Length: 301
Image 1: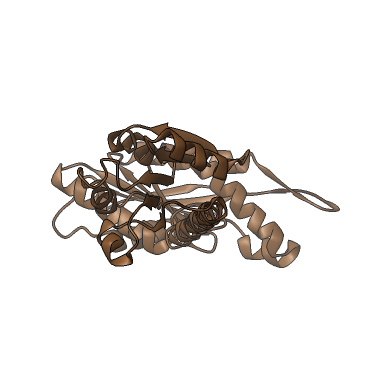
Image 2 (image 1 turned 30 degrees about the vertical axis):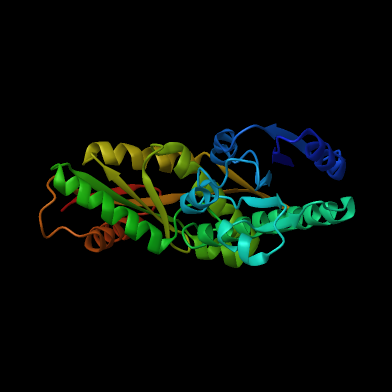
């Protein structure tokens, strides 16, 4: 861990250096609080030990400024001071303080406690990020889940409406997916979905809005694309899926096929909404399946 130290007294600095004496920690001496900001902004360090009595922290209102900016990761501040009253230090906004002259053992304990708190904060931040991702992304395919896709595609529709841009919505569904699940089990079914999702991602534009709508059904919002151009994208995905194989133990490789339906809108009117577009694309997809599957069916709306 990189530990920033704002201490201009050589003797005090040496004491802190001795207290650290840990191969895992890197001590970075600083002269003023302004030198701290790059470390906070880059996330390079999360721990500061500073002399409250002689540094410029109080004069420059450093700690309130740090707390106001709310860095992505927590920043722990340990103050050393001659003050002996909690009330005198309460307004400082620091996480902890140690009174001078301090014993080496006490300083080591404070540093160890700070490191544990920083480690815990990082773990909690990681868990929070995972929970946020779970609220947006489908775990199996990595695509946006249904609510997230609906929100994102609604925004894309509004943007297309403002700039009078056409758009298309593609619905894709794995052919005979229930039969695959019933014949080979859920684990093979999941592998089929992962393979299909990977192909959809590879054959789509990097910025396209893609979601998993239901179990084996996917949706793609294509802004600025209509008719034959949307059809080419769907055909590219279908061909890509057709070229994949899923290994099945003691069985020949499973050949996967997919059908697509497209709802294309040349003009986005005030009445155009996402949900009807999705339903029209799904109906077109159902028509493609009824016609034998492994193909695309296009409708204009």
